[in-house]
Image (cartoon, rainbow, N blue to C red; front, side, top):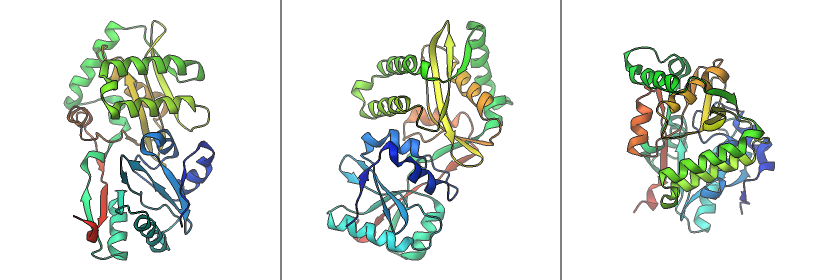
Length: 302
């Protein structure tokens, strides 16, 4: 019987070990993301045949992420145990966050056994950092106008690193954002708020760094992220006073310019199928979308 356990802060070295063994491009492949979303997704984990196996739960849907290991050798044994575990517990087996490469592995090991589906709503958006800092060319004309308007209205704004002293003001800013967005009526926004607060509460133990926009000494925007792999930074969160035109363009540009110019790409996560968010992410002209599939056993498809 597999021994799944809730994810805790003390588990970070184990996750870091597995995530560093290979190159991963999906935003879910960091300890920080899994840890801060642990409550909303009831995330549990186990080591199975020397593979790190992660089992989230969304409402009544149980699923697994693809097992993490140094190579694919032995992954079939781990997958067989996972499928047995799901069957014993009466859960239909489902895997999510599958890369095209892992899809190929599954098709090779289990020919014809799985039904795959592209999950467009969770494709990550990847951009060239140089593009988002310079905003050159006609396609970024509107972004540059927003920047100019902001800097004209707030010439004395400050960009500063996120520190322990700024955590409480950032949480206040987040809660104000939440009120304006109607979080209390939206479960997904409440989850996002709680995930960000969890990141703030564990600021010194997690690996991310952040930046803050101050206007007249008040926090009006914040963001934070960390290295996803050797050339890509992952943005975990970015929030700002929605009443201030151009502030999102400013916090985005300043954070990359001040902290991540040594990297080539920035992963700004998925749009969750939200029309306005998809439009906003596309407006920055991604150079790549991180494709993800889900898979279910064909004999369990209704």
